Length: 112
DNA sequence: GGAATGACGATAA
DNA sequence: ATTATCGCCATTC
Image (cartoon, rainbow, N blue to C red; front, side):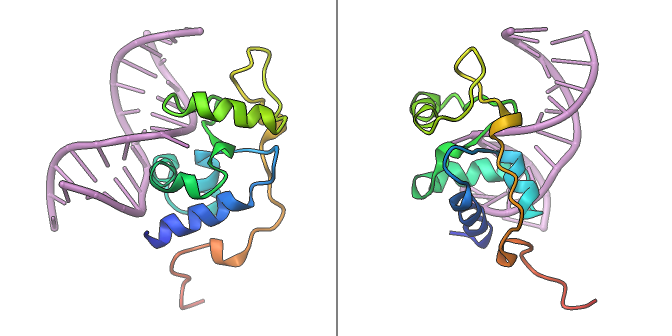
């Protein structure tokens, strides 16, 4: 398990029940990597965390896991669009007010 | 160390 | 609405 993967999982752990983040949101909050890097971590280690609270930016689930993910989201009463397969990101997206310091940057600048 | 990979995202057609 | 293209970047070959 790489240090980067560790931070991704630590952040996903913090997503409250009933709220979600896009892969890209996780990357941006960490200030490192991108959506695909977060997705790669979830693919390998997702089972260790509330993986179902991470999905695509447009509110859809990754096709590979949609059949398992959708019921879990509904069970948490996550706001869905009328089609029932897309999350209303504008309502369900989690906006953390303060994030633990250790999730910030991998190598903090030793200077400045 | 360079190339390939990929639970993505934004945009264009 | 759907498909195609390209950028992204940590990890893995």
